Image (cartoon, rainbow over all chains, first blue to last red; front, side):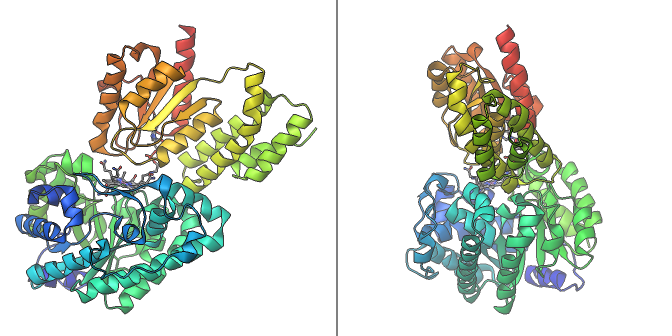
Length: 337
Length: 215
Ligand code: B12
């Protein structure tokens, strides 16, 4: 089986020759590719070379254009702080929507615009598709509605908005979904098969707010992605124990789990059909642990998840993870059917 | 006599308007500011912290409660200062250099304020010199350092070393916290304590400041 066939078969519940392997790499990939993280996030050619090299070195079944949450916000005009060797960050104290009325004036950005950060991601997807699309899954990436709203409004402020201004929150989430659908469409047209949706902020809000505000817009986004023909991967890092049942009802092809959410608990909440990915503790087990410990932890994940399982960590593979540790993941996936 | 139990409820429920109104009514009726703080608001924030710990409350509920308390504190603080009442202690808090995660830090700051501390919030991505400055010029009793990234945990060590180099380490207690931080790490970098969550941060802060004052 090619990598691509393997992942698609796993998603569709068909037999596979071994477990698919899809850990998220960003800073790790940049380091391996010999570029600073600033270059990785700014220049799609650096990202693509680093992704290809990492996927090649560890036999990953996919390559991804994920890099940082600030692409959409940057193109909308948010103030972003750049670091030489760290992901760019959005400055919350000067959030684009610190004045709520600015939302009405926001225009949907053109995801193809020359020189834009969204356009750079679309270019990354296009180049990844040319270079690896025959064999591997090419993953595009968008922000989920809660994460995107937090990027524009400031996470701390958004948490209060849920209580204070329902109409504003729903308008903001509507805007986020419309923007991300257009962004995803551009990435799909450029050759992505899978779209990852990152909605980490959703792990902070608790079940009531999740059901009331976040779930309906995640649903809208994911339905829209599926209508565009995308396969969808949901990534909510953090503690999602109180919202996993909702996450399981969204109809995603793959749901990632962070280490704070026990695999067995998620499996019980989501039923047997949901493909689950994860959920090694990225720092304590993957980076700081031993190859033997990693193998054992993956055995446990796999046992708890059952056959509909993809090998990965709870979140990004941390910078500084020893090669032998990542290799242990690869070996585990290779020999497990 | 106004129904002061309502003040407790207003803080627990994150209802800022009610908290401010009830505080005003209480003060107008001649209730001591300290009484409002220690019998109603501090117990309310304790309850909020408890609910957060047992995953009944989440970040939005916590931030709402903190805002309600802040609103009431604005009425009470000037009166406390005028009456010469001592705060539980003066605290400088911040997320360490290189780290932009501030939700946990904000929660700890609010709970400390709710616990009667005078809190100087230095923000996120705070350089060691700023903490040194807070000890030298703002007379803080306690420094709270937060880090959410493994790669910024060493900044906690750097901050403590900066306090040592400036010769002010023995004038202040330092506690550390944040998801990747451990008790052992706190010991290794010679911090005075580690707190797992916002509630334990308050308990620890009270204990350390009290011990320092007794000494
Ligand atoms: C929200 C979030 C963000 C937001 C932060 C927004 C903000 N304004 O804070 C954004 C999107 C900006 C972000 C960016 C990044 N993030 Co982030 N983020 C998170 C997330 C989802 C939640 C953190 C949070 O707020 N938790 C809720 C609060 C309430 O919990 P807490 O902070 O732990 O605080 C509690 C206790 O620890 C304690 N406490 C905290 N401080 C203190 C201090 C003292 C003195 C005491 C006593 C107690 C105490 O009390 C608090 C209340 O109980 C976590 C995932 C997770 N599982 O935690 C990742 C996470 C922290 N992020 C991570 C990473 C890697 C990053 C990025 C590098 C990602 C990237 N590649 O772009 C960047 C780095 C940016 C930077 N330079 O800081 C990793 C860190 C891994 C590691 N151990 O190093 C995590 C764990 C995700 C993961 N699973 O890999 N992130």
